[in-house]
Amino acid sequence: MTTTEPTAARPGASELIEAVRAGGRERRPAQRRGLWVSYLSPYALEVAFDAGADAVPEWIGVDLQHGDLDISHVAGLLRVTERRGIAVLARMPGHDRTAIGRVVDAGVDGVIVPTVETPEQASALVDAIRLPPRGTRSTGAARSSFGVTSGTEPLLLLMVETRTGRDHTAEIAAVEGIDGIFVGPYDLTVSLGIPSPSSPAGVAAVRAVLEVGRSAGGVVGMYAGSDELRALTPLLDLVALDSDLTALRLGVASVLR
Image (cartoon, rainbow, N blue to C red; front, side, top):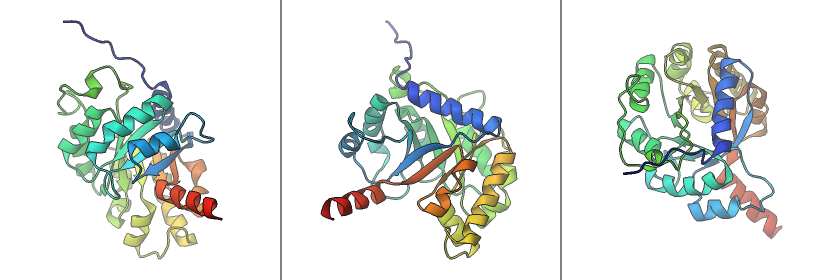
């Protein structure tokens, strides 16, 4: 039986992952801009990222926790992004190791895990995503083993989005095997009792967590969604500027104007 050597199907995606890891290690923010995707089907994504499109994100965050997408959509979305060299990070619905294994098997470039609050949770997630001897993730017949994905070790980014998570950010970021943190400013400020993440108090709270993550020498990412939060881009390796929902609303308003 012949085997297929893995190919660099997505050189753009591989380069992005390497760049953000280097940015974390060197404390030199990579500032890679992306789009948060919660609703777009593979067909809609293909239309949006057509070869004639004026602007294409460097990466997308596929939201499997909120919105209209689930794990069954991931492979179809990847087939679109692979053609354009766009990196794909999957925001998981929770900490389930089987779900993490399935999206990694599909070929995502990384996972973003919500609501991580302790170093013990962080260690369990390292075990779930890393192959032996670093972890216990299993392998099998999947896209990631057929030579059609980037082959890069997936990023593991842990979301800090609660008061408890904020209080343990330094310990979480120090866990061996994770790549960094991803701040959820909206849930974080709700947890802290701050009315808006875009308020001065909200921006200050988010900035404080980002700076702890940066000092740990890991990747730092965030979903923005407002001008005030986008202003923090110089601190970030990965920033989701806004969402597909916002893009759709703006597009419809532009057409009807």
